[in-house]
Amino acid sequence: MMLMKRLALILGWLTVSVVGQCSGEEPLRLRVLSYNIHHGEGVDGKLDLARIAKVIRSVQPDIVALQEVDVNVSRSATVDQAAELGKLTEMKSVFGGNIDLQGGRYGNALLTRFEIVNQQNEALPNVANGEQRGVLKVVLQLSNRSQHLTVYATHLDHRRDERERVLSAERINGLVEEAALGLLLGDLNDVAGSKTLDILDEKWTRTNSEILATIPVEQPKRQIDFIAVRPGGYWRILETKVLDEAVASDHRPIMAVVELK
View 1 (cartoon, one colour):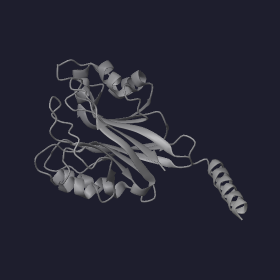
View 2 (view 1 turned 180 degrees about the vertical axis):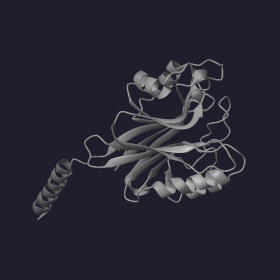
View 3 (view 1 turned 90 degrees about the vertical axis):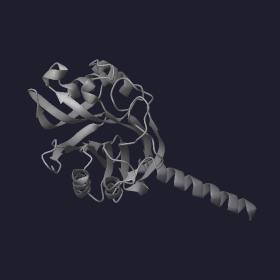
View 4 (view 1 turned 135 degrees about the horizontal axis):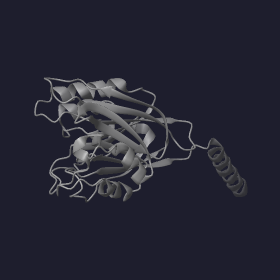
């Protein structure tokens, strides 16, 4: 009887193993980074995209959301910063311009090692003639998987009045396709416990529950840069940390390692 039970256990294990191998849907681990690069200008006043690229490469990310990116703007030597950072990091780049500035455009960018299926830049609500903000929505084909991943890269209003951020959070939630896998990355210019974050929490799961301060860059005290996933039950959050970089920009970058179950 004991021998029969052991044989049954072995056969059961073999069946699970074969089914798992045939499905081809093994857990996929992703390294994701969000970084407000201050158009490549560090706190030392130097404009240095190679330094920004070095920070990015140091953590070998799969997906990077960048805020405060210049494309053909005179203050940053009319360089297409999104394309240049793509070259320097050997990743594909997408840019979403929200503001006309000094002969060029200013906005958000995404870098990725995955194939880009679709991209769209959505204007966010504008209150009291503030800076126009946007969310860059990029659909990626994940390696060796049947699913697509939709990444939302954004940078919300910085003013004390929260009305525009609240409307923007509602707009971002409204763009979400309920069944789709999603990542939200960006400078939200608000903190945990704010109405902005509470609204986003209705649709998104932040990768850190404890505060990981990202500003001010010299001695960070507040977290306004975040990474979040959805649907929460599809992801395992393995690590979230703020990088120890206090010169290249006026924000510290935040990185998460997540696993798609």
